[in-house]
Image (tube, rainbow, N blue to C red; front, side):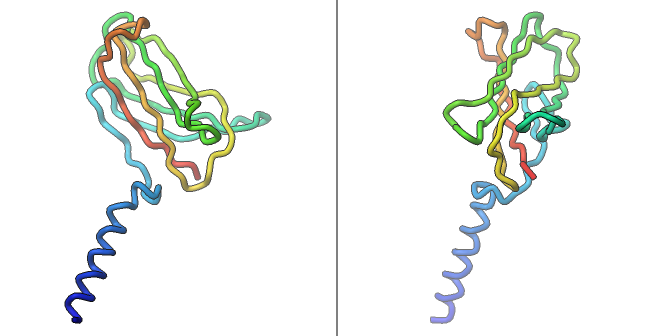
Length: 139
C-alpha cells in the first residue's frame, strides 16, 4: 500500500513539473531558429505614454535575399484574437533586427507572452521562408 501511495505522489509531482511552462511559471530562454537568434526580448515603458511595447533584438543567422519581409505577431493581453502586428522589410546587409510593437495595456506580472516572427521571401507573403517564436516575460 505504501508503494502505491509513493508511486501516486511521484506521478503527481512529475505531471506538475511537466506543466510548469504551460502554467507560465518558467522564465523563457532565448530561442534559436533557422533565421534568427534572440539576443534580447522584453517590454518597453516610455515615459508619458500609457502601455508597454514588445521589443525583440534578433541576430540574423544568414543573409536575407533582397526584398525579404518580416511580419511579427505579438500577443495582445487584452484580446488574444487581435495581435499587435509589426512589419519590416529586410536587406542582405541586416545583421541585427530590432522589432518594437505598438503600445498595449493589461500585461499580467510574471506571465509569458508570445511573439512570432514570420519571414517571407517578399512583401507579397506568398512564400514563407521560416518562423521564429519567442516568449517574453512581463515583470
